Length: 247
Image 1 (cartoon, rainbow, N blue to C red):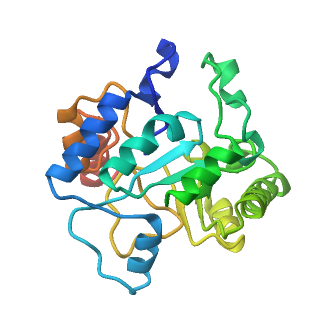
Image 2 (cartoon, one colour; image 1 turned 30 degrees about the vertical axis):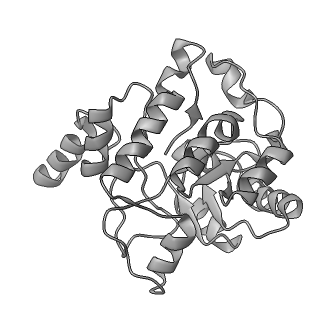
């Protein structure tokens, strides 16, 4: 899971920004170590029993839909011929990441429709990240369902194809939100929970490993191996302790 592929503009967003150089090095590592970089569509086929789950499989996703995904990430993905998925906040196409401004983040341009269409032409899958990037589990049910359904409709109408994948903003999901996403017609949804995905994973709670701007290549390698969101793996150790001591 990536957010911004660019130099950070301030310390607040540094965690979420991987430079183009870092991203290229990470993609080179995937290639050198013979990882099978697959699309979310391929994951759906595997989960449905229509394809075999590849060894060392990994999928690349980008949350939010900032323009640097097109400007900086796409050329690198094309150079390695890697698939990926971009989850777009559909009400903010061509605008600014306004949900972050009050928290001290800099204004970043969001993907335009032309850029989204270009990503689609190059084989990058476009998914929904809601209308406005709100916490779906903390708003009124009617608002949450609108965010889930209307964002899908907006993207489909403009792109002229089915939008099948969803990512929960902030990773904020509960059983009701999960079910609304399924009922809206999405085939798969991504959480922000770390861990490996196996064939028995809930397709609407797919796990992901977040890559941080401060991650060294060594940390990137270990995150892939351990499927943890931080390195050293404090959260992994904490979760193991909970299982051992029954907390």
